[in-house]
Length: 365
Image 1 (cartoon, helix red, strand yellow):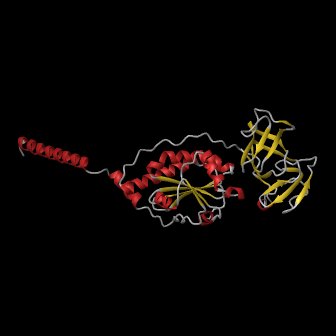
Image 2 (cartoon, helix red, strand yellow):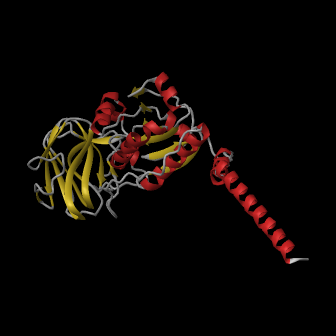
C-alpha cells in the first residue's frame, strides 16, 4: 500500500476517534449525575420492614405549646424527635439544651420535637408546674402530658430521659437512653431530614456543623437516692437502722458512723410512697457523697440551712438556690444546693427549720 494511502487512512481513524470522544463528553455533560441517581435510588428503596412505627399518641392529659388538632398536623410527614422526660429529673434537664437547640436549628427543615412529659412524682402531674418548667428551660416546641403513662407504655419505655426519632413516614429509626450521644443523635436528624428532602424532591442542604454545647456530666458520682418506699426496691440507701415504715410516722436519730452514699434522718418523718415529710418542728438530713453538684427534689414551704463538711457552706461552694447558706423552699421542683469546683468526697447536712418539708430525691452532677 502506498504511503499516501496509509497516511490518509490513519488520519481518518484519528478524526473519527476524536469526534466520538467529543460526542461522549458532551453527552456526559447533559446526563444527570450517576452518583446522585444511585444515592437517591438507595434512599427511596430502604427496606423498613425491620423498623417499628411510632405509636399513636393516646391518653394525653394536657397540651403545652400546641393542641390536639394542631399536633396531628405538625407531625404529619415530618421527622419527629420524641423526648420522654420529666421536669425534676436532673438527667433530663442536662439533655434539654441540646433538644432546644436542635428545635431552633432544624424546625424549618422538617423536624418536629415533641416533649412527652411522663411524671415520676405526683406533683409533676400539675400542668402549671410543667408550664413553669418549659418556660424556665426555653422550650417552645410541643409538650404533651402523659400523666397516666399510656404513651410511656406504648413506647415500651422504662427510663428518663429517652429519645426516639421517627422518619417522615413514621418509622422509628433511632432510640437513645439517658444522657450523651448528642453528636450521633444530631447526625441521625440530619440523615433523616436528607431522606425526607430527597423523597419530596427538595434541595438538600450541605452537611451543617453540629450543635456544640459543653457537657455538664462528670465521671463517677453518688447515684440518685430516693426517699419514697415505693422507689427503693433494689436501691435502698437509707442509712438509719429503723429503715422504711410505709405510711407511718417514725422518729429517727442519726448514728455516729455514717456509710458513704447513704442518707440519714434526724427528727420525726412520715414515710410516704414517693417521699418523706417532716412532722416534727425541725429535722436533719445528712449524707456522705462523692460528686460536684448536689440537688434535691423537694416540696413544701420551709427554710433550710446547708452545712458542708460540718461547716456553714461557703459562697463559692453554694448552689444556685442557696443564699447566705440558706434555702427557702416553696415550689415543687429541683433545688441546687452544692456546686463545688471539682468532684470530691464531702458530707452535706441539711437542717430543716419548719415542719411540712417534703423530700423526694437526692441527685448529683
